[in-house]
Image 1 (cartoon, rainbow, N blue to C red):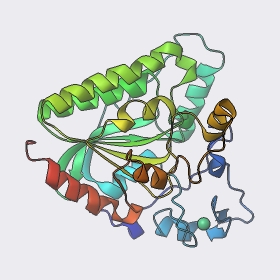
Image 2 (cartoon, rainbow, N blue to C red; image 1 turned 180 degrees about the vertical axis):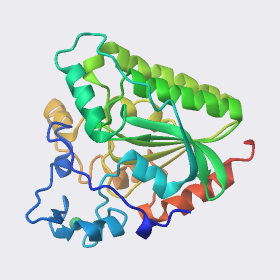
Image 3 (cartoon, rainbow, N blue to C red; image 1 turned 90 degrees about the vertical axis):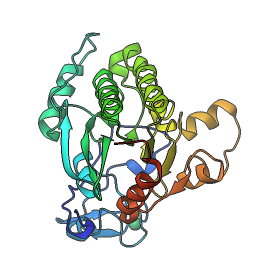
Image 4 (cartoon, rainbow, N blue to C red; image 1 turned 120 degrees about the vertical axis):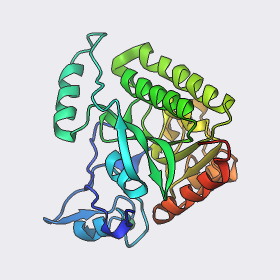
Length: 289
Ligand SMILES: [Zn+2]
């Protein structure tokens, strides 16, 4: 069983190009000194080693740094077996620069696209799991992400297992046009069939979850939990403010705001996630194998 303090997390520095108005906290942190990074929330310098030992959570202010998909899986599961690991997108619209971006991300990030799917055990309970990787093109939902999630959900339905979906995304992948939007309907359809078979889906929303992902599977969980202070929404706050020309409430689009307004069921600290997910699985897996 992975123990948080002993799990090796990668340090994460996100692209400056990824989303947008709502997410000022995702700017690249500067490295003032070798071996240090800066907290994106309280701006304290943190020894990277200390951050890694602390589950990538700021020891000063409790800010949850984003996790790479495989680090997340290792922090939650044992016996993980990935499916469709080699599925990759093609530039079917001839979008300028898309091939180059895909190739460079695949080479530098050691993953073929923005999601990892598979089966494993959380404290001995078998489950399907989908984990998005924000570092790969902002966790954008394209044809491969949609197809991999759909296949995982269909396989879980076949095996009569629950599904956990961990989101981190800026929304649909613009380079794939309407095909990326079609993934919203496709994944939702597969999840409807899972539900019709009396099988549960649990969502874990992490910072940030936006756009077409929020508008499809991220909102379809039987139980929806979130990490503290995660930003979750459809359009970004600044876009909304400019459009409706009104001041938005304090904490708008934070997980805490969404718990108060009914979209999120519960906020769970990263260090309690494995226990909490095991408990939820125990509650809801009555009709699973
Ligand atoms: Zn901090």
